[in-house]
Image (cartoon, rainbow, N blue to C red; front, side, top):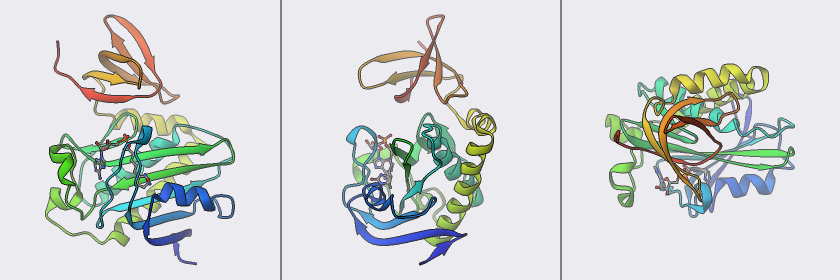
Length: 237
Ligand code: BT5
């Protein structure tokens, strides 16, 4: 079986979703096994949204078995993408909770799915050599579009694998250090934002990301803790 920096890797040409494939093998494979596909036919975002996954991008899932559930694993994915992009000369930031953006556009997204404490699937999509899917217009970007360069998917995968190993280790050893980095990299802090959690829309100033991973908003002078949602940046009222 192929390994990338000590990590077992399963490569697929095409799959519906690497997260679904990862779930189907999760019980049998070791902690840290990575599944990567050239194309996904039904790539998923959160809340059943579509993740467009044409050839040229990195579409992968990692099976993690830390023995606990921790939603902050989403930041293991986001910080690893940020470090990987930095390795290739691209500066990026976290749009809380699960997006990585460059220059106002989304370059990567993380989808975390846990089966109790048994395993967690960390799904990650990164636009590398693929052009931005047309229907996303100016909301998405790829490494190719930012730099004009074609990257070796294996080199990007190796870098991602290395950084995921490091941040996963930090989450287990010292989650507060992980959260320090998350705060440093969350570019919405100090911005006026709208957050939609599927039911409720809240508008306020993003003040902080707390140690448990939640977002603190100043809503008309009172502080509100947001556990989950979609953030859009808004002009100051
Ligand atoms: C996410 O969801 O951002 C999580 C995306 C996770 C994708 C990976 S790929 C490997 C693994 N297997 C899967 O099936 N999924 C994971 P969310 O925050 O809900 O964002 C979804 C939204 O991102 C969509 O509604 C689009 O607006 C946008 N989007 C879709 N495809 C995109 C792309 N390739 N690049 C940038 N934005 C995209």
